[in-house]
Image (tube, rainbow, N blue to C red; front, side):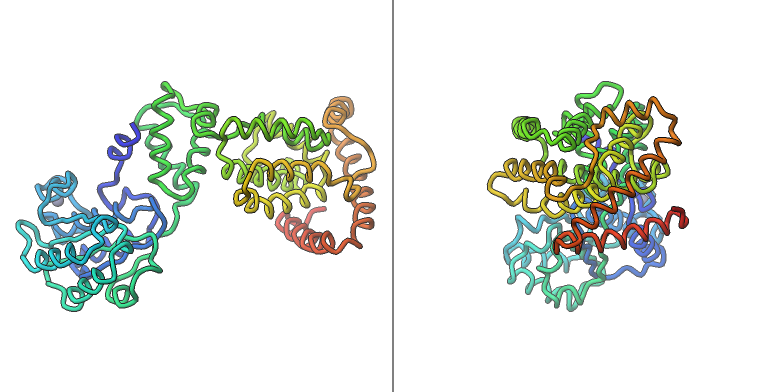
Length: 436
Ligand SMILES: [Zn+2]
């Protein structure tokens, strides 16, 4: 399914490629004006459209309608290239053709005119894997390129490329695809496949794709094998090893209540479930970031966080209970520790320590005088009308803020963090139209 889906929705013209607008425009114009370069270098991380654009370029220059800005995808040449059967378009995997012999053979080939196309196009994928001797042999060809030939090098590691080769290529740097662009593409595919979906499910897959459209499509394919007719967030989380919102609720409650036993058990549950730890940490950092926005902007932050309805109400409560200072310190702590956790010999043990530190934070620096619990906070919210409690929380917040600051200002480590914190609050309040 994953392979099928990727192949079925592989873009066949410039307009259908996701992202990379300036590159698409430049290549399409060059094709239309019949001013293609003898050598191109496409660099960028995996799955951002390098090979796809190389194939489209091969097609557009050889289309029977050429010169044209887009391939027609109907003529025999376009169809042969789509199927991968054109004798004039060679796709070479640099990783398995590193030797100089392959390149020598290639050099002989390129001097022969194309069989039934305008151009011979040689696409070398993962080209940085070529050996030094192979690069030297190629350089000779690039110095006097045959007129009917176009080289396209695609690479994820351009820094390994000899500068002599780079300088002979038109170099395009591919950007990672934005989360939004990936989401839109996935939603289009799902609509065309007539599969219903929860927006959160699509968001998770796009996030896990991490800027790569190919990875996101392949994950979508994997998940669809198991989902019938409707793509649900809970299925995506289960299949891709991602933590659910319930787990984060448990973690934040346990941190708030300094429940070390529960935090230990949660750490072990994470170990046993084989969760994707790197993705978990990204989400955990994001929770603190979202809580900070909620503590600053209240409901106005709803467009900046992914929570809606009941879920938004719950996390607003959590943000109020923790308070902005503690959230900010915790956020910074998790952000700094995330790298160490993944590098450690036992990442789960390191994670457990971070949980304990987060729970222990108020004892290190007394953040709150009152011993509030999330439940008490919730009850109060029901009893008293919203405006009163908001005012109460605000005044309590200000009091504890003041105490907290006085107590910790002498601590050098915290002092620095607080300075940054103040600067950030000023920025956020400015963004918020100078209110408060
Ligand atoms: Zn055509």
